[in-house]
Image 1 (tube, helix red, strand yellow):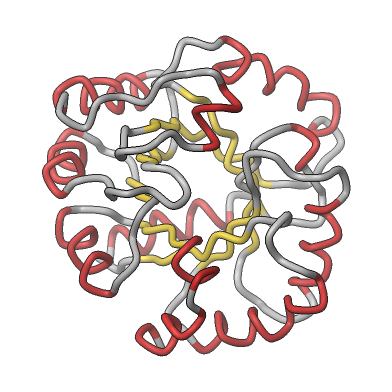
Image 2 (image 1 turned 30 degrees about the horizontal axis):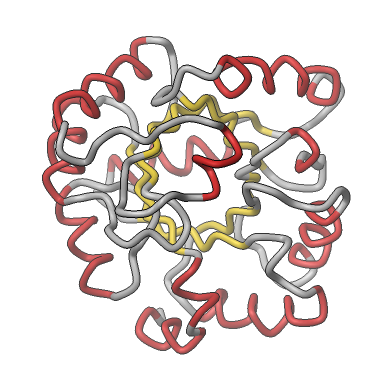
Length: 241
């Protein structure tokens, strides 16, 4: 069953835009989760993504279990490592860092995950993950020991995204990184969307409703926002249903 992915496809077919709220288990205290999720429920958010570049063991599962008590939104794992997998989520973005050449993040971590996924009911969604340069070094760059693609080389980004689709990825995720100085540019989003036949996710550096709308208008099917909500929960007030 592919409920989460089919929901995304259905929304794309209807030109409905989706918003995922990204929560890092290392930055969300369990006792704060219920209040935070209440604000998420009142917003236009359609999904909750859980994950971070480095997360303490068991922190992800503990947070997922708590979040599931307070929302009916799909909870999707966005893991930085196999230690962040838990069968209590609804789906898993099975991320392959196709913008880099570190085999661990292209296929190595995925092999490690198979023993857990073999007996798991998680919906696994193959996702081509592209790290785009944003003006500063990100945690993803440090952890994966890969360099982001230059934001100036739009054709390389587009070709990499298309290659991911041809390899069988079901989603393409353009990532500027947590706390990015510059979000993925409108031109990159626009050209990538024109080239792809699968849903496009864009995240990193989006801190305003205007930037959110600009990403949607350029072609993003799903926009992911994390740091902006961490820094200022009043941002939810601009995104109420």
